[in-house]
Length: 424
Ligand SMILES: [Zn+2]
Image (tube, rainbow, N blue to C red):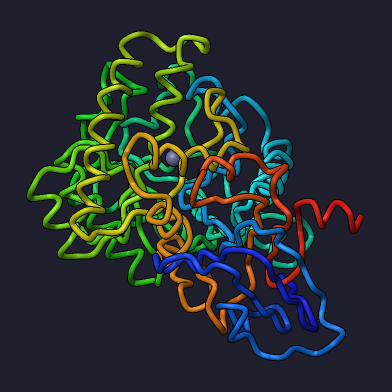
């Protein structure tokens, strides 16, 4: 991905650095050749060359670009699980994924980690993003997900003679789990996404208290993935699935819904980041009946909402790390609404806006393994910056309204927001 050349100065705004430190009023950010050269009070800002480009933040908020830690570029606002794999051909889903990536960038998300993808689309989307062929967040790719046979993601009955090859690699036993990871290694993914547990979406045989992989399968996944330098995450709702994942050496947990005392201790001991992706649950409850979700499914989402909110709160309060990402791409939580996750964590879970922003920036970069170059407004890092007209700390929901974005920058280049539109 190209970076800017020359010098840009952003001034007249409050800077949220992303480290959790108090916001800096009347801040100045100096960007040189796509990297942050200075971020701090205007009074201590260095002299800049007279031909530097100046951006007026209009008294608004200057933040690190947001990071979506559970992004499904190929989920095309589906209305049923079954739609995820066979509704459209791979050619069309690839175009939809490129369009979703552009939308995420316009929503202020300058980086994202894929939470799983149809076929190998996110791997190639990442390549297209890296060479500026299409626009979107800097991406970490996951490719196909791994699930045990008969588990949450194995929904096509055998008589249909349709496998799940596009979306999921189905495994029986550690040998097949190893083979699946080896296939993903060849495909070029960076993260292996697995399904240790079920979900409220599948109340009959794979609900949120059901295990969908054995510990031996999960351990084989981790050993093989780590051997090749890949990281592993998993859809973990049931308490025993969470513990299996931690014992197997997972690098992050998705959801981490039903965390008991022992699981919390294990999370803290290993300092494993958890990505709760919780607004999805609330959206499923509020809008589920519009989309034909049964009352049983909605009740299950209510249980996972409450369990997930309590677990997230406990993890953060005990000093653990949370990433912000939200499983967007279903009819009831479509792409483009990513920042609702952040408002939700303030309004429903009870985190402060500053805590939520740290989760959505610094912790996101740590999950990506790119904390040395992304996630905070600090000298030496890439200038991925979001400038918002208004006080985001006073009202986190401003982030949901992209009309208020003055600029979304990647590597110092303005890619979206009002200044981008006025350049065009
Ligand atoms: Zn997901």
